[in-house]
Image (cartoon, rainbow, N blue to C red; front, side, top):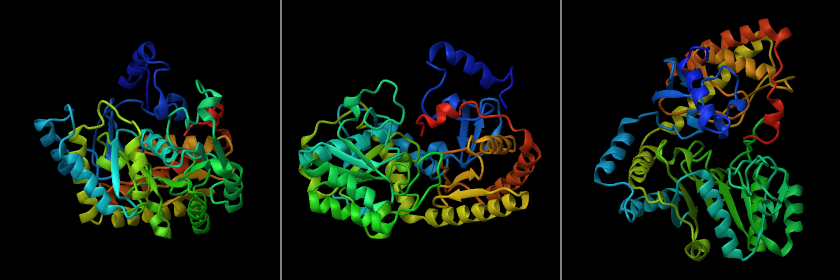
Length: 425
């Protein structure tokens, strides 16, 4: 897909001269099949166009920010209107108050909101607030869970020193005994328990939260005076219109939000209850662009669509149709094909594929047929997708499974597996 004379290849070569590694973070060339494009020209609705003009149905949704479609006219109109009035000003506009009021009105546990830019900002702020509230240091979180790219939580060790990772204990997600053991080890120094809405670690099957695990996390925080943090950055508003653990009757003290909060415009948030209000007021957290008004205008329109449309029911139904159709086609081709996680955030993994050969081949074959999937990271559905899009994805999958079956005996090794397993998302 990225031939020697392609625009994408030209940009890669230029990038290598001025950007370390040519690319970084979650879009690193080491994390995807070699034929995947690195540079894109535009997006509209559920589709992306790469710089060489190829169009894809995008099942990554920009790694989550696209909830209502790229270039959504209502959301982007609100953004552009505010740009004409002012964006980065000496202080915030009234939109910040309106947005905080809207979120407090929608999210059951929330009494206040603070705004930032990235998910890592929001999770790091949650940690600081929890430590300020409890005057303790230790955080308990699940092994393999992704909470951002700051030094305290980045999955890759380069440049990180032991003190960056100090005062952290780990448990196994959904394992009550493991959670209890970590809390016991923390003793009277437990500041907070961090939890993902569901297990969405890379490379392994996703899993819904066990209600017993979630309830026990709440009980342990109540018993010790620690705060319970649910990290909604990835899953927020894709499972429910409230905090995700509300579906199983558990409310956190703090929740971090990002990605789709403003449908792709840069904005994230920390929400909290009155218990932690004084601590949140006491910490110093800020950024030059945290008060930008245009993303807040986009977020208000995004929240309106979340409240007033059936987007969640539609993407859930589309996800179920995709899952059923893929299962049928995989079985017909003779593959063990695991689909885990919520229907709105699926992960695809093959049985008997320890080095991801099948997964990388399948992803490349889907890409060649106009569907952008990921070989080891969870994907996302957006409200701009249609039944016709799902049928097109299933047609592509039928062809991709057939191509994989023909190549199964001679698939090349995935030579980047060591890099991947060293701690990527």
